[in-house]
Image (cartoon, rainbow, N blue to C red; front, side, top):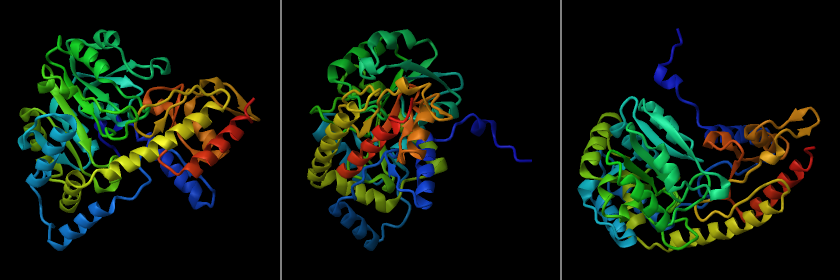
Length: 397
């Protein structure tokens, strides 16, 4: 009997990983696919970070680390939060995990009981609702449209909170939209949350450094709510270290202790060598971060300009991350021969199979009228991909 658990059957597979796999299969068949589906920097990890990892191997950092991470890494994160964000945390308020993805899941599993509600602004990163379901919680979605730059309002937040609300997940800069909440916007949301003491803020700040409007703002900057904020961050996006798998939470000690207890039972501490590499990332020169940010900003300007030249797409100007999330619903109902575009999944599949450009339909992100493109690729790839998309969509009548 091939019966998987009910827990697993409630989950959906990751649409972004599925699209990436589909494009890889076409590439393996010799098709020239440009992949704009995957959410990772195309840069290599900076050399000084790789050197620190090599040194760690030579110095035999090959044994189990403490569950929450090496003290040196936690101290480096404390210093980063102080120097870059003006936030005071102690090492006991930091827990390092196998990527920020595990950090988010740890937090949800540690806080959410069966039937608890977790507010998730839509568009959302594909894994948030699935993690809430895994914890037997109920995802509650607030729709933020392209007209409001994909950001929720205080009024929307107030209307969504019930006595069952346990947490809200805020991702800024956002995957999939690239939208960034300003300090004033966060403060307005914070003022709503102050009235509801049971609600924890899970602040996913993994794209913090890929920001085109100057300074990053964090919900933890507000002293009157800091004791209810869990910051999620890591080295994947800022330092081009996706495969190294190091994320962290900075949170009230009781939450850190809970996550430590959980992590101690199912993964223990993250990779020892990766931790030494991450320590070098946080303590070394930050010029590499700025160089990559500038490249992403140049690419953003390029893809926005080219996307706006494609008839039928509605495009906003994202302020961070490396995604564009255009509205494509003007094409729904159009045909290419027998083939009909009914929704954004059809739209993305059409672009892949006919235009040989991999994107991800907005259905997976809770915004079925949009689709996501990652511009974490070369300028040449962006120009060619947008040409292919324009030519492919011109075939739809």
